[in-house]
Image (cartoon, rainbow, N blue to C red; front, side, top):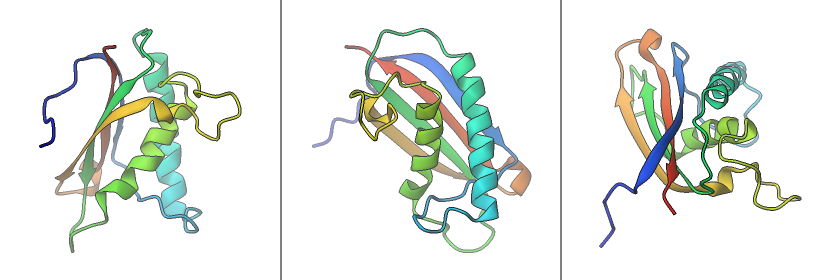
Length: 139
């Protein structure tokens, strides 16, 4: 049976994007204008999140994501395909600390040990976006 308890953690920071439709990460198709716009919005929000981050000595993190999706028709995309660009934007700004190994292709996101992703369907593009909270896990 899975352990469904929330891990003990301390709040570090949050990334928030509103009014930009989240776009999925699809290898080979990520030069699409909508995806480029989404990444720019994520990186701007990640810069703000990093600037306002609470100091921590933790090396392990929890990332809690609420996707606010405007999908007027159909079920939408796979939930997991939205995670990578969000996590990468935070990692590239150093929110999860440095990469574990100097020559690692990882950017620090390997420090995320807990991931919680939820989808909230919204009624307009203006409400679409993401709220991602970063929490430092207790050792």
